[in-house]
Length: 551
Image (cartoon, rainbow, N blue to C red; front, side, top):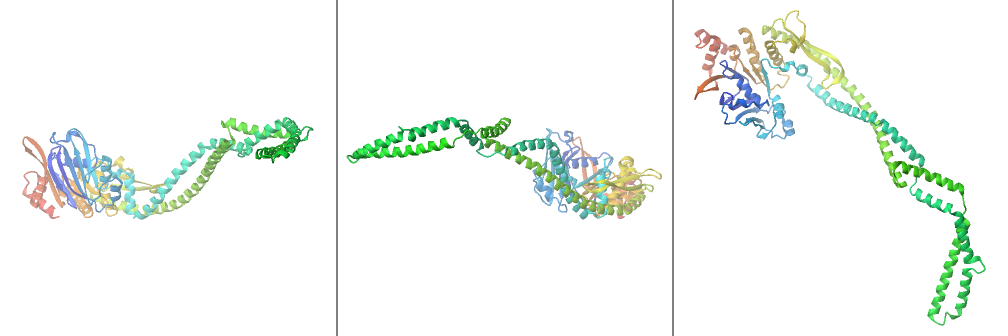
């Protein structure tokens, strides 16, 4: 609810403050007095672009402050998301400096124009003559039908599920794109991995094979060399071990003469033991070593497989090849998991579609059931507002897909005359027709939709006194449930005011100022009388004005 508006140094305004009624506030005034200036100032706190030409005094800054009671709105989450201090009373301030700098604040916290626009969308519903009104908007049209059909809870459940559904569909598209773009890569990975699997690499295999190959390739030299060594050590007539044994026996008689000689004898015995072991090892190696060309070929073939893989991948060891194989297996498993994830997500989306389609059908049925009574009530109200032949038609078409609001395409069609074709509102309705149609529709859904402060700027343009009277009654009834502000030049509407402000010009210090004042009962009657007959008003006009105020 808009409580008050404070304006300083804007256009023809030096400084004024307006306190708005909780119900119907009427603003009237002389032509050109500056009624539209008030809306321009309000537009600044609603995030509209600033014009440096708006200064009344070029040396001072322009300040517009709007005070709102937001206790009835669910805005805490919005304030938290935008890091703003929340309070039941919100003050939105816009400051323009003479240098062209613009600043905005919400409860003294700096905010940008986008935040102002989003916040004030929930607080002020401004309708100006010749503007593109939101009744043009098919989304708002659907919102009205849903409100009349009491679809709020069903739609909330649907939209919560649809949010997950839309997110999953987006994820599925991404996975499918990734799968499609990775198909060729997957094929290449599998080809590489197949080579590794065929190779059946074993850790330390290369070193062992290379060592065995080196031994087998030198088998004859090894057999000959180690056989000869065994012969020299133990088997020949003059074998080394036999000679050393002879020396050991000759030294036996002298070992006890001195400790040193005994030590030498022990050392010789130890050498003999080592040489005997050495001879046996040489004999074993010579006996076991055989030249095996078949085994050599097998080893060379196996090593060729390893060397080929190393060369192909620029690696130098089996350990590195095994690491690469593990990486390929991990990548391949990722693609395999991707296919499984796609299949699982497809199944989940199919189940979600079934549930959403069922809920959407319920929403559609309820919407269609409310269109006829809604159209009838609109026709009755339009007839009261001197549009007896005007018709509104709510067209609901079934869509082949699910949307965030169900599976319906809702559009208001309008025909202003008998025999006219039904066409979209924006294509056929004039400014005056739009104003009356907007008032009718919003008055019907006022209890079902939490409408913000409704501001109507001269929606009575082009209508007669009798229609103005009925429009005033509709505005008055609407203000019983919502705060309404109406700028009007029609006395029949102005007479319904709970608070009546008069905008006027005055000259001070050779400058023209726009000012505004709240009228008391006597001033209201005189103002209405002037609107009826001119200034000064006639006695008959004053009497008529008194009758209008009494209702």
